[in-house]
Length: 202
Image (cartoon, rainbow, N blue to C red; front, side):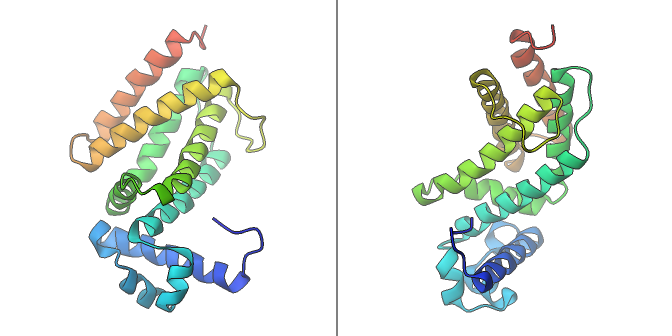
């Protein structure tokens, strides 16, 4: 999110703006995130907000990055357990789902923002997917270290497929089509299908 030579005060204000966005979204969902309200609650001028964020979707995608980085820190401290790649990846998605459903209004708002289809947000949404990919790959390897080598082409493919499945299931949950239990079951079945076919557990 930061520029190469960010203004420290602008970065502090940007963080406060994102924290305010998170608070408002959890209180009232997507519709509660109004730029003027965010600026007022964060104690910044509208011009300051517009220097970093151009829409509520932009704010919510930034919030998604912050939340996903926090998730990555938790996963690093408490890596998913399991004797096989499948077990560890299932455990990771259970953790990720629990984290998202802990604040349902916020999560629904963030998922809606990623689906807005704004070209200007594509790179920011990609940051979220890359963070998720990194966590899936670490679960595959049984490693918690952030500084691990880049994923191989095969690991990247597996990670991207599983992340895309999870994301689609989460969008289904946000629309009322999935429950907490059904998300976990769908991901367990998907992981077993993808990884067992890849013979990673053999």
